[in-house]
Structure formats: structure tokens, C-alpha cells
Length: 219
Image (cartoon, rainbow, N blue to C red):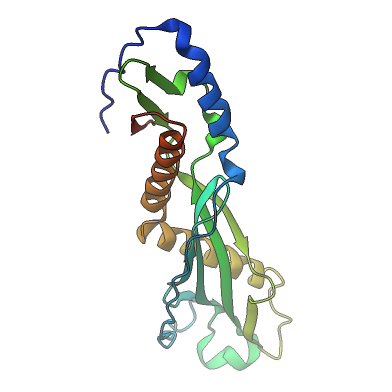
């Protein structure tokens, strides 16, 4: 987004009002409210069989189960799940040396704008027109929280001559986390967080009495 030339402040003596607005804005995290929940339940396709004798890693469909607007720096949260099958297929010797597991992974992924990055340089105030220009940092993924109660190993199979790879579940969790984050970004979590943050800041400053608010994205 191309940033316009900030309006010129013609009355420097009125800057204390702008500083009050800035201070109030930095307290914004405790002011918002949860706005809604959207849920969708998917149909999970069958896991494709791996090539004989080769390591395999299959990921089922990732679907947004709910979207919530949050009352802090994170403005959007997606709750997603996926099914990952990971291991080694030994073909006809699978009964002896095979090692695989099927993992259902559920995670909460939050995205938003860190308002703590805002300082006086992020605001331009025109006292005569009542217009405020806010330069807002780019939204980003704030956290990925795996739901350990909901995440579970659906199946674990090992051959009679192997104890199984103790790192296999951890590896499957890492794969699932990457897939869930990628899907959240593809589904628009960053754009939604940016829009929500801009709306919140605009409404907040309008509530303070400014006639017009213009939000531009930096970064």
C-alpha cells in the first residue's frame, strides 16, 4: 500500500490531545469483545497408500472449524484440525519392520497487529480538519497453540522386530502445525486480522471525537 503524505499539523500547541489518543490506543487490548463464531465440519478423505518401501507422510484436509475476534492484540483466531499419517512402509515386510502412526491434530492459530509497536511517530493529527492518519504495523501470526486434549494418536502400528521411532509423534505434530498455519494464511487470516485492527482503531479514534481517521499499513 502506498502511503500518502501525512497532513501538516498547523497548531503544535494542540499535540497533547494527540498524545492522549495515542496513550488510550495502546490500552486498546483490554477493550475489544469477542464478536462471532463460524464453524464448519469437513469430510476427511482416505489416506493415500504410500509407495512400497519408502517413507511416507500424508496430510488430510485442513478445515476452519471456528473463527473468533479476540479482545486483545490478536484480532482473529482460527481453530483448525488435520489428520497426518507418517511413518515408513516396508511393503511385504511391514509386519516385521513397519512403523507408522495416524495423528489427529487440533490447534488454535491467532493473527493480529501488535499495537505495542505504535509510538508518536505512527500518528499524524491535523487539528484544523480533525483528521488522524495512523500507520499500522502489518498483521502477523501471533501464536499457534496445539490443543493437547483434542490432539491424539488415532493409530500406531509397529512391526514385530521394531520398537518404533520415539520421535515419530513429535515429527507428525510438527508437520501438522506447519500445515495448519499455511492453511490459515491461505484462508485469509492475515488479511482479516489487518482489516479488523483497522476497523477497531478507526472506531476508537472516532469515539474520541476526531472527524476522520485514515489507517495505512506499514511494512
